[in-house]
Image (cartoon, rainbow, N blue to C red):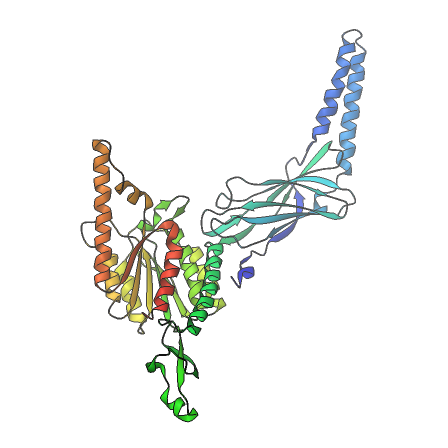
Length: 459
């Protein structure tokens, strides 16, 4: 993605400060030295005065602890810098770098516990960093977000020791910040690379005069054997005294609307993600490809009302706005109002456009409202209706029952699958391009369908 660097969180840096409570502790070598002092217990059974030797040893250990504690730098001499190495995207591993900046004259060995929410990582990371005198130390850890939207990062907690490891100090570093978790950016990048390759193939086909690559005028060239007579430009041929052929390309600057249902049906989870998460990833991949193709892309997400709406436009700034809006999408507990959204889009978008509707079908005896809403758009627009299915439903319907209970379950699954097929067939009869896809293949299916529509000049 061309503007991916602008999506990287800025990160934060702050100086450590001692906690108001007890902020000192004992290092592991302090306890090791105390254990060594227990050696005096053996001769103490013979002569009692060796107990005093053990107490004297313990006193020396305490004095060593105090000396080591005094030599440790003050917390204000240490800083922590949190640096994000990549944008925070759903289900994508990204690295975070923690840098310990030591402004004191003594090296420190530190353990840093960063406060990362469960939205990004199942357990808070703890890393070990060694920073020399007036030097820096670096450690990294990874996160893998499981939910889109804002994520609040907390403070970092620091435990540091000298190379003696006898005394220890505790400190807190104010590194609170909020980062945005975006849809899967790697998936969008993968499909943009695919588009670039398909463009190369398209150019090769154009030189080979393969039909079906659009009817938008691109240029003129001299007539070649195999060119169609309808493509000959007779006015240019008259001026030049030889046959001239018009060259066409796939139409550009067409309008594509991505409509995403965020109602209760999209809350269903498939694996670690919800159907709405898969829809958001597919919308981002499609927007990347369509904008690269020169089309204008708009976005509508809706539940009981329209939640996000971006007018159709072009450019990297528009793509950035779309990424931000997709990150903020949330599932709703209620049924979405499909007819309201369709009426609003129908009244606002006068020019014929491609509407890609990402939703699911309710299991009712009546025709789902979303089917009627999509039908409302068909007289003026080309509708690509994408129902995100449940993979376990198809697997259950194809299962051979082994007992009476399984027979009822398989029969119910087959009835649901058959009803969904009928609803999609009804949409196709009315002129829509309707299909059902499994959640894991939403992005490639939607992108490929868009490219086929462009290639066949269906819009």
